[in-house]
Length: 110
Image 1 (tube, rainbow, N blue to C red):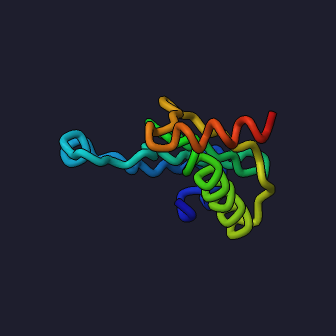
Image 2 (cartoon, rainbow, N blue to C red):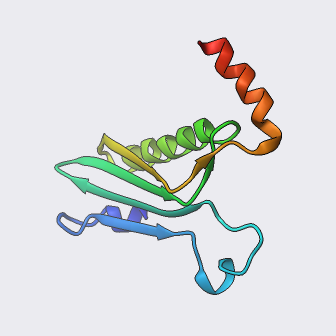
Image 3 (cartoon, rainbow, N blue to C red):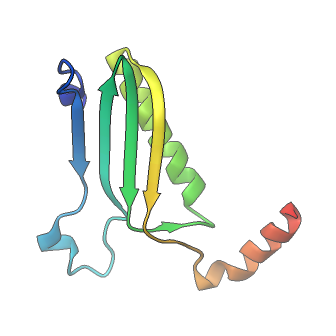
């Protein structure tokens, strides 16, 4: 990803696919993150992450921080400014076993 993003504009785009249809389509557990796509434009790095699902109670905030940290790392290595970060989720959910704990947390926040 670093090598592709280091190319001169307008080519400065890179995409990583974490989904391999021939393998993941038939697995009980498959990668939640499907694609990480970055581009540089006018010395700014923009990052897009597309995930098919995320656990809102246990994982979402951690995942967001991980990918923002990835963007910071890439930007620093490429000597670019941080641009916008986009996180696309097809399904954001709370698992049944976390329902009560999540209700308690929501009530504390209200």
